[in-house]
Amino acid sequence: MTQLADIGVIGMAVMGSNLAQNFARNGYKVAIYNRTYARTQDVMEHYGATAGFIPTETLGDFVAALEKPRCAIVMVKAGTPTDSTIDQLCELMEPGDIIVDCGNSLFTDTIRRERTVTAKGLNFVGCGVSGGEEGALKGPAIMPGGTAESYRRLGPMLEKIAAKAPEDGEPCCTHIGTDGAGHFVKMIHNGIEYADMQVISEAYDILRKSLGLSAPEIADIFEEWNQGDLDSYLIEITVEVLRHLDQETGRPLVDLVLDQAKQKGTGTWTVQTALDLGVPTTGIAEATFARGLSSSLKQREMAQLVCKALSLENATHEPVNDKAAFIEDVRQALYASKIVAYTQGLNLIQVGAKEYHWDIDLGETARIWRAGCIIRARFLEDVTRAYRRNPELALLLADDYFFAKIREAMPHWRRLVTFATMRGIPIPVFSSSLSYLDGIRDPELPANLIQIQRDFFGAHTYQRRDKTGVFHTLWSTPD
Ligand code: ATR
Image (cartoon, protein in one colour):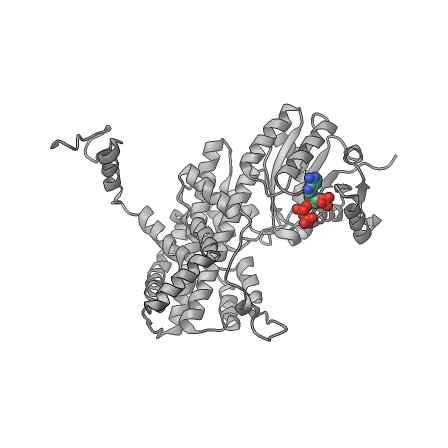
């Protein structure tokens, strides 16, 4: 009898076939299936029969090729195709089998799917996978949800194919929590990625507009930064991108690329969730809005025309006297804003975990982001340590290590935000992160006025500093 597969992957587009190849490379027998069989044949042609694949032509054959309890990874187009594939699998699989959705699903969809699938006696695992196509192939960061029982069967295989942290060789995969926890954490990972990319872009923008540096010159600065606290994959690729010359024109390619950024929606999901849960996640929100602003072509055109007519294009031109000190201000502003963005993102995970009854270990979450994923960075080693010191830490930036860093950054950061504001250079995340910090540490916020305004127009009541209880003033009469 032919050997059964340890695991199966449905969907042979790039992510699915790379994931399947990763399992096979790690010694697993992998059943593969794609709606259009030609694609499965392409994969077989490309990787050959030696890859450890069992190609299957129908979903029935696919299920029959799997060792029990069966593990089937779904990696098809998000939305209805994922739902219909899961429905078909439910008809073909048996109690105890596990359906794993490794796509970028919204966590509330995962919660819904888990309910439907478990009602049929099967297990469902919503699993976040980060690292793009290359990560899927060579070792991604993996964030599985679902039950502990499912993780016992699936976890060892996922840990085997996951990236290994350079610091200690530990796999970047852990059981995040039940039902939608994995996709929830993956969503916030992506939101943080938006903020991370935006702060790097703000630094680039200030450096080019204030110092007149070329893209390769800025690459040199980033390369130096990459030797210290900011050491990360995103800075590393930025260096490479900024040095890349367009073959046709010989100019830096980045200078030829339109300044209009797109998004696939995970940043928006994160912000929507943050709003639903009432968690101030300004870094991710501003980063998401910055992409939206860049693509608001009509509005940008109008604003540019009006400003030109009023000669408002250029704000004050403060000269930069000490170039090295200025570059350090930019670096510190970037680093401090990054600490704030992570503080907010991790806070969102904490609040979400409470709301959805997940037991999420933030130290473990940071640990598995250290390699394989897009936000991988030395920084995450420090975040892991902070949560190891205090697993209940409610505010990352209040950790001794990070607070010392924020304190050191503070004068640089304030100077830079002031400079960019006077100069008219947009720094949505640098400045909103500073405002967040000023707000969160302020013992005298103006929310007293908001409370009382609400009571005035809507009888919403207010609380007082000097007495306990809830109060309402009859505003038409003297108090
Ligand atoms: P691509 O542009 O790479 O083809 P896609 O259209 O998002 O990406 O499809 C990704 C995967 O989902 C493919 O494996 C696709 O199967 P086909 O090769 O047959 O198109 C699969 N897919 C899309 N819609 C599907 C559906 N309704 N049922 C099952 N699989 C589907």
